[in-house]
Image (tube, rainbow, N blue to C red):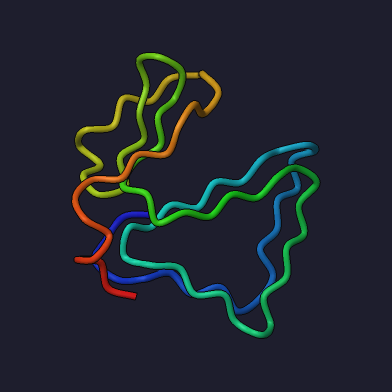
Length: 89
């Protein structure tokens, strides 16, 4: 997720890829509504992390997409930049 607003899920989040894991990153916040439902066969990860480290050399950067280095490696860690006290919820 990129941009300057939070993400709201208030409906069905679906993946038709068998066994696919879904990663949702938004440093600006994630709101889950009363009508939210997951329809996925893998795992679901939601985080307000700034980036997701991929293997040893890759990175998906939600705060600054231009810094992303996309590789075919398993996610290794969530990264947080700055203080969580400065984040809006």
